[in-house]
Length: 277
Image 1 (cartoon, rainbow, N blue to C red):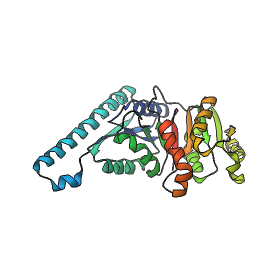
Image 2 (image 1 turned 90 degrees about the horizontal axis):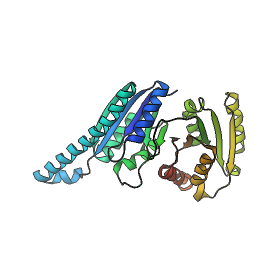
Image 3 (image 1 turned 180 degrees about the vertical axis):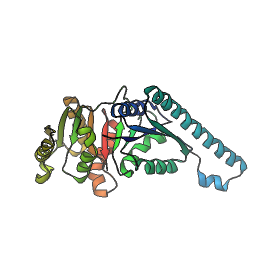
Image 4 (image 1 turned 180 degrees about the horizontal axis):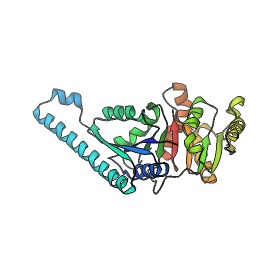
């Protein structure tokens, strides 16, 4: 099971989904949980470098406010972590968005699992842009929590999104600590005729069964523009707690075929999702 966790605590939208999910996961697994709260300064550094003292003072004030927002979000996490009695650490960081993204990505590469909450579509913020960057750049699994999430995280019924690709296989292996403990597994394949025969959902089910992990197969046809909604429809029908899927992006071909699924899932997820790139 995952024993070393990192959670991103947003400061520009509610931190509760990330806090509730990460602390409950740490409690159930006995894992150590480090929290990284972020506060963003929107002032343009290049502009400040060419400006006068008044603008420089404004820039310093903006950074102070960003640090205050990060500290306030961290206080919420720490109060809950202390009450839960878990092993935890904390890091509040502030700065320009690009600088913070680099720091969070670098830190996340050391952990078994990174936990981040979905962006809130009703509130435009820097925090909303961070999840996809983490998925694509950390080199490990990311647990994405819906912005509407409340209560304790559980992964009793898991859906494995399977298209036979390298990224789907990477996500499967990265999520194995969850999969091995699940009560029920469902292999979800959209447009099964497109999956390589040698990596078919039936063959995946055979390999999982050898590990003592029986899985049900659900397959649906779908047009490209409806892949994400088809997956979420299956998740609702099967009463799933968690989805496991590859996070596509960057490669022009992958972005054209699959990147939209990743973006739409990040935008519209209804249950937690483990993504790996």
